[in-house]
Each structure stands twice: as C-alpha cells, then as structure tokens.
Image (cartoon, rainbow over all chains, first blue to last red):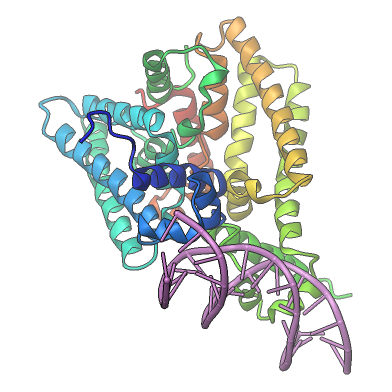
Length: 193
Length: 193
DNA sequence: CCTACCGATCGGTAGG
DNA sequence: CCTACCGATCGGTAGG
C-alpha cells in the first residue's frame, strides 16, 4: 500500500455531492450532474454508492453525531453555563468554516430525508436542542444571561450562523482565528461597541 | 360587486404555493401538490397562472422591491447611521413575522430562478447590500459601530434572522411587539445582560 | 465502468 | 375546469 494514497472514488463522490447539493439544493441536483463532476457515467456511480439519499443520510447523521459529541464533552466540563454556551458557539463557528459544503447540506437539506431517517434525524436534533435549552435555562436562572424568552434565545443562537458557511473568505482579510473571534463577539455582544 | 369579496383563485394559488415552496422547497414542490391544495387538477392551475416559475418570480421580486423601498425611505431620514440600522432591522423583523411563508421562499428559493430573472434578482440584492454596507461603513467610521470587519457585520445583520419566519409562536407567550423588541435586542446587544 | 434502458414523475398543452 | 396526453428528465438496474 502506498503511503500517499489517492483519495478514493467514493470519497471524491461524497465531496462533490456535498458541493453540488449545496449549490443547487438536494432535489435539483441530479446524479448525472454529480457523475459529470467525478468524470463517470451516472450508472457507474452505483459501483461506489448505494443511492442518492444514502449520501444525504451520511452527511446529515455525521454532523448530527459531531454536534452531540461536542455537547457531551461540554456538559461535563466544570465551567459556568455561560462558558459552556461560548464553547458550543465556538464549535459551531469552527465547523461552519471548516466543513462549508456538507454543513450547509446538514442545515438546509435534511428535510429531503425520507422515513424513517427523517424522524431519526429530527430526534437527534431535538436531543441537541433540549440539552442546549437546559444550559440556557440555567444561565438565565443564575443571571448569566438576560431575562429573555428562552426559546427565542435558543433559536437565535442555534441559527445565528447559518449564513457562515456561505461566507466568502475573499471578501475580507481576516485570518481564521480573527474570524472566529469577531463572529463570537457579534453573537455575544451584538453590534454594540 | 359584493363588498366582502372572496379571495380570488389566483391569490389562493399564490398563497398555497408560498406555503408549499417553503415546506418542500421549490424543486420538490410539484404542481400536482399545489393543485390538490387549492382543489383543482394540475392543468386547471394554468387558467390562473402562467407557470410554476412565474409564482417564484412574483414572490422574489415583490419582496426585493419592498426591501429596496424601505431602504429608500430610511436613507432619507435625518437620523444617525446607527438609528438607520435599527430601522432597517425592525423592518426585517416585522416582515419575517408577517409574511412567514413567502419571505422564506424569498430567502431560500431564489436560486431556482432562471436567466435572466436570476441575474436581475441578484442585481437587486446586490443593490440593497451595497446601500446597507454604505450605512455600516459610515457607522463604523463615526464610531457608532465597533471596529469589526464591515463585510462580516453586513452578512451577520442581513442573515441573522433567516430563522425568524420559522419561529413557532406557540413556543412562547410573547406578543408581536415583545417579540420584535427581544429579537432587536439580541441583534444589537447579543446575549449580554 | 460502460451502453442501453426502465418506470415514475415532472411542468405544461390540446381540445372541448 | 376537466380528461387525456406529451416530451423531458429523474434515480436506478441489467448485463456485459
């Protein structure tokens, strides 16, 4: 086995699919489009993958597991609720900047999953939301967060950076680390001086 | 003519289409789905509308014009740049809460427009963004806003409330006015106390 | 990994 | 406003 192995065709397909699904949306992205991008005929894709939806499933569930794992770790840290929220937001930000295409698919295209995966996915999301909500509720109760509607805080924080994977790095000269700090600051302090 | 006119079939179709496009996405929403929701056969839809894409165009361009009109008015007010930003954000919030379905279509489904409408739409968006950017740049220069990356501030503000049309009012007991104030507070001050 | 092809579904039209 | 239908495109399979 060579030490510098070439990327497998399967992983090429997955990467191209995430990009394609992000660009056109899952439904509008055709397997013929995808085949062209990896230089195959549509029928040959099926030597590497099971189905179009299998790709979507893989992307959605992988990110869902990542978020739940991060939640698990943060919950066990001996830090304040406010600090837990900051840790989680940093995780969201880094993921959005690192896995641009597939995270957009995770955010926007999961609704095209079919049963029973759709329900399983909704359950994982609900679990994450519930655990995030619990942290927020405690932070509001202890006075770490302002006394705003808990559900509103939750949705605002969970969805505040859905645009970040679409962020075009060429628009600014920020380094990855500066970008993370500035985005975090906007989430925590808004646009106040 | 009766004084209490029934909603025209055409406007019923448009309303149902906005909801359907929001739920399933434009591509996944079929004209047969839509016909069922307004109790017609698919072919009969075409007595009221020109095409599926005509509905998408109407929704996208109507909201684009609304935003540009609001921008025009705000630009002419004799108030600070910071106050202009607040006015614009309030307009975004109210629109998101009032025109739930069609605003989601405007936000998320415009990419399914085809040429030349796609380019026209992008131009209108670009115009709105440029004018919003100009306000932000002045506000940063005058010290009303913190010295963060202008593009980052712009995208954060433009997209911060994309989740709001999905906000489920049943999740909380806030009135429309309380909701507007709390969302605005989160945008301006983040989650700080 | 390809050619050839399948049944299903799509947006939309003809004709009454 | 309906029935009947069209060509195009879809995800995917057979067979080699």
